[in-house]
Image (cartoon, rainbow, N blue to C red; front, top):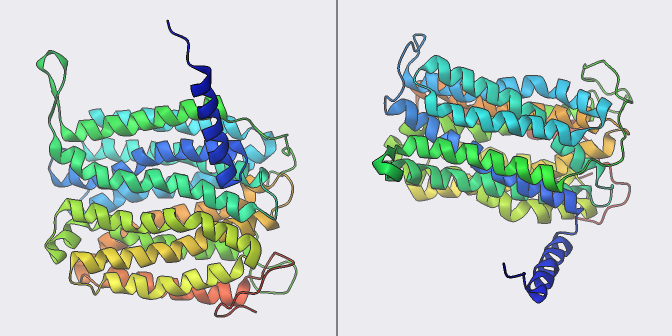
Length: 440
């Protein structure tokens, strides 16, 4: 066998070093970001495929007396409810053991198995069971991943690290919806020996494969930092009130509530795909693009905003993001064309990008040694609950009018902006001047 040209290997190595230099983060953060990008493709596939799977009558059995929109909402929401419910436990356990990599691999292994299990799901009960197990699996991944990023960062670059991690994770999450509709529509696919596979089975197989790829990347490229664990206590309670007395609410708890409201507002869109398509007289491809518009904005802005918040402070970006979230959410209930819905989702994505990385960075600044998993899981747990509440809420409210779910999300976004303005203080001691509404 011909040996690889040393000059080619040198060039590839130089290219890798160039990429690392551009992002200016620990190589393990970048490797973890690539791994999450891979499993993000599979997860976002399912957000589009499951509603189509149900709507096409592929599954049967009892619907528990629920109509189609509600059963889709329950299936999608169960993932978030179980995922979020288990995150404080897995975050605390990962703090105590300091073995972030083990927790991430456990979750990815479960995700690969459950994604493949959809190939055999024929009833609503089986869909609910699989989606629930997926939620538990991801509960092992998220707190350990975010804690690992936090521990590999410093106060001066924490926002940038969070931004890079979220950027790559969201590349995968944004690519999935665009491809999912096309994969389903193009089926069935011919295989060896004259057999075929449906578009739905192809989509589920892709989701399982991406989880396996992510598992391999973490196995080969990720190592735990020096242990800072064994300091977290057994108490899983969350501080609600500010012990310092400066504000009424604890700042990390406040950021958790804000994350809950933001996630609920952005997740209203997923469940009501049939109603959106009917309202705008469009197909599933347009819906996939609109869903991904939110992610596109975040991919473009997460890293620069993360780095900017390391210089200008966390609070101004979080506050402005929540303010922008108000009109961008309301607009989705009022638009009448596919193009304006895409624009509204894009602006909503800008708002989300201004909140995500700065909020995680601010919470990371406040987390004590060995508490990253416990403290940051408050935000990731709340975000997961929001992702669960959003689809459930829109499924329940859409019958009262197309604009009603988005009006509900608008009220939550406004309340979240008020909480940031009144209850969250800046954590960086020295920041450059930046004129932002409400910045003290």
